Image 1: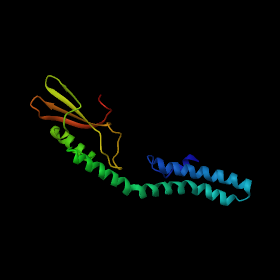
Image 2 (image 1 turned 120 degrees about the horizontal axis):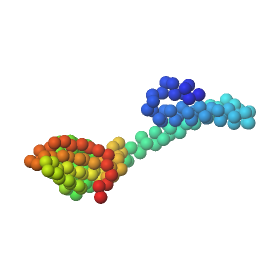
Image 3 (image 1 turned 30 degrees about the vertical axis):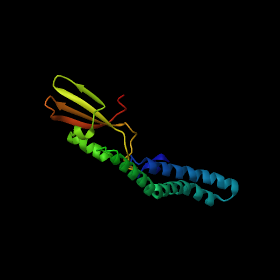
Length: 163
């Protein structure tokens, strides 16, 4: 049954795989319920359709609430800008990190200097939009500069709170 269900499904599509497996299980359970109630086809059809209907309802609910989530994100960004922060989106954080713009990132959360380089690290704490949310404090910018302050390399990494 697994080969039959997973044959045409891309390997990384877990949601589609779950729906197909649930439909297969639903058909079997529907047939069993139909045997007990003498309506095999109705219960088998219900068992096959229920996972698809559930997924459709959930996707519909997510799409219906997206404008509200976007409105809340807009308010958080506006409040961030009103507080005078230069970086109020994940995209801005990534851009400033990749450019090596330490001044815009503010004071680093951690800084370590060696004989020829200094490594500074910043954490992005928000605000987030619904389509780019990561746990606060788990997006880290690591920047390495030489003794003259010239950028050697910068990277965005998953990270935990540095404190």
